[in-house]
Image (cartoon, rainbow, N blue to C red; front, side, top):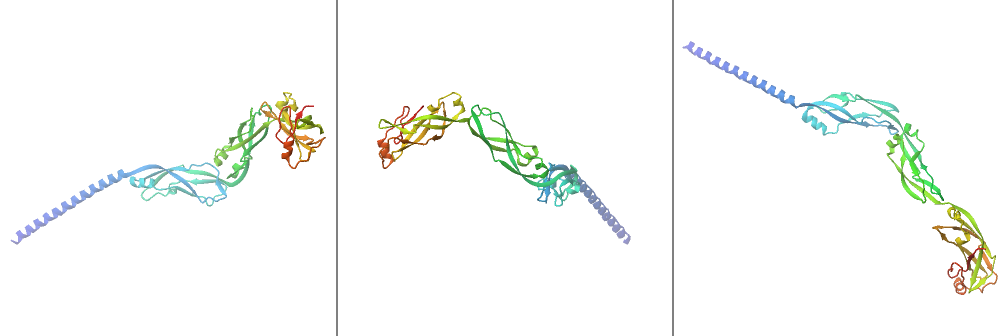
Length: 353
C-alpha cells in the first residue's frame, strides 16, 4: 500500500516536472521570437542620411573681418533612428567655430566627427569638407572719391560747364588688403556726344569684384551742365533817340556802347549786333537825366545777354520840369521807337550809328 502511494507520488512529481520543463521551453521560444522581431523592427528603423549643417562663426574680434569666401554649409552623414533624425533636422544644429583668439592671417577649421554635436542616439559617420580655410584681415574704413568717365563731345556751338557726381564720394568698410588696392571709384562711360542741354542721369559704378562684394552694384547721379558757347562783343555807338510828346530830345552823350554776350552760332551768321537790342531811356524825376536800358531781342531761338551799358545815363539838353514822382513823368513824357513802343515812364530807343 505504501509502495503504491509512493509510486503514485513519484508519478505525479514526474508529470509536474515535465510540465514545468515544457513551460520554460515555451517561454524561451517566445523570448527568442520577441528578440528576433525587436531586432528586425529596430534594424529597419535605423537609417543613414546626409544633411547640410551651417557653419557658425562666433566671437570674431571687432577689429577683424573675414576677407575670403568660404563654404558656409558642410555635409554631415549621420546614422540613427528615423524619428530621431527627423527631429534633428527640425532643430537648429550648426558647426560652431570660436574665433575669439583669431589673428590676421589664415585660420584653419578642422571638421571631424566630434565637431558636430549630434543628439543622443545619433552617430556622426562623416563630415565633408574635412577642413575650411579662412582668410582673416584687419577691418579698415576708407573714403573713395567718385570719378566720372566720359566719351564724346557736346554739340557744336555748346560747351560743357560742369559734370558733378552725387554722391561725390562713398565711404567703405572692409578688409584692409582689399581697400588698399583701390584709390577711387570710377563710373561706367558717360556719353556726351551731341549733347545740347543740361541733364541728370543715373550712372552705375565700374567696380572691381572685391568692392562689389562689400557694397554691391552701386549707381550715382551724374549732373551734366551744358550751355551755349558765347563771346563778348560790343555794339558800339548805339544812338539814343529820346522822344517826348512827339519831339525828339537832344541828350549827351548821343550814343552809348552796349557790351553783349552773344552765342557763337549767331556770330557765325554775321548778324548786326545793333539789331539784337532795343535801347530804351527812362527819364529821372529830376527831368535832367535819363537811365539807359538795353532789352535783348530773340533771333532764331537764341538770345543775347546784356552785360553793361556805357554810359548808363544820359543828360537832357533841355531839362523837363521837375515832377514829384515817376507817374507824372510817365504822363508828361511819351517815347517812341522805330521798332518798339516802350512802357509808360520809359523813353526812346536805339538806332545804329
